[in-house]
Image (cartoon, rainbow over all chains, first blue to last red):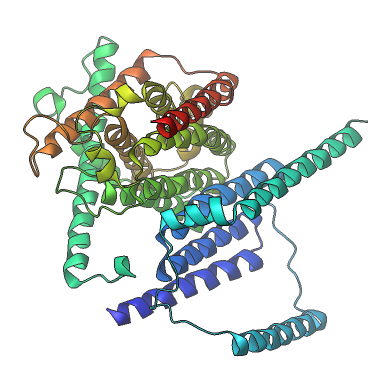
Amino acid sequence: MNLMMEVLFFGFVVLTMTGALLAVRAKILMHGVLGLAVSLLGVAGLYLYLGSPFLTLMQVLIYVGAICVVLVFGIMVGYTPNEVAEKVPMGRNALLGLLASGSAAFFLMVMVLGRTHWVPAAHRVGDFSIEHVGESLLLTWCLAFEMISVVLLIAIVGAIILARGGREEGSQ
Amino acid sequence: MDTMQMTLYDVLRMVIAFLLVITIVFINALVMGYLERKVAAKIQRRWGPMEVGLQGWLQMVLDGVKIIAKQLIVPRDADRVVFRVAPLLSFTPVVLPFLVLPFAKNLVGRDINLGLIFIIAVSSINVLSIFVAGWASNNKYSLFGAVRSVSQNIAYEIPILLSLLSVVLITHTYSMQGIVAAQGTVWFCLVQPVACLIYLVSATAETNRAPFDLPEAESELTAGYHTEYSGFGFSLFMIAEYANMFIVCAVATVLFFGGWHGPFSGEYLGVLWFLLKVFLLMLTMIWVRWTYPRVRFDQLMNLAWKYLIPFSLVNLLLTALIVKCI
């Protein structure tokens, strides 16, 4: 059964990476969103592998089922459906940028990896059951949890303000 | 992780369950297609299918054979890959929820403790498939159907979740078997009549059934998001729609109408009661479809945002208060 778990893990990783590549390299915006959906499904699979079915389902429900749908909706309302993006040339600058960001990420990763105390996924590090998640969110970390909703509220208000301004300018 | 350590027995069990589910999905589409045509005919005072078999019961089988034999046409300007993927994408999310539906006391694919959330999460992919289908067709009717479908689904998902939540507040569990077990003496449609009504209305809208079938309103949009699909691509959408109806009605049965509970429902015989309730609910949906005219789009949105959501919120609040006080 261990082999099967390994296969599952790498399957999810491949799914996530493929989706992510598709999302950033797509020439049609819609394909990008679909790639994002695939990538998020892969992440949901990784959560399952780490032993949190609740987080998996929430990932599917919120990210794939809600956020991707809203993104697609935005594309449909905002753009002509089949607009093809200009091909981004892979010039010298792009290569240099890739190299710089890649090496920076590499060094950061090495530093973080060296200092982390790793626990294998097979060992249960915490209780991820829905009761425990609920208790910690609404009792222990209640303030942080409520602050997140305030941040979301501010984001919504900001979005409305931005959209309002644009509309008035256009109509004048 | 306990749920991940599957033995060979479990794997075999899941494979068998999956094959059974696929069979159920296809047979359900045949039965429902036939029922829909017959009930529609009865309501419109005509005969419906009569030619093949007694009372035309073979009609849907022959239609299935015909549809398999048809050519698959991809429109010239369509996005080929996405156009082909969309029907499969619409089919997957309707198969998975069957794995957690409790058909009888001992007849369930796998009773996980997050069963209800599993069904909701998986079904939420369905709307994405409709959208992808409408977009990939590159056709204004399909696109309009898809846009309508998504705005409708976003609006009606909220009252569905809120009404289900008020039941979960009483049962303290998301497990489908647990919810059924809690209804041994009294069905939740009597305890939660408002939630039940809100769920049934929203579920009809969620499955894009008349009187809320604006995404595929034939008089305005030809057929909505699946206008361009021919042959088996179309039939996958149709099968998925009927399977979706089954799931929605099964969830209603589990949450509000006592699931497999009934006289003489032993370990396995409860499946008869379960199917009876589900098919009665689906017959009601067909009956409603052929009785009421299609609503206007503003009426549809008003119903969701101005009535269903506030009522379900108040209902949830009252339920929480009562549960807390008892």
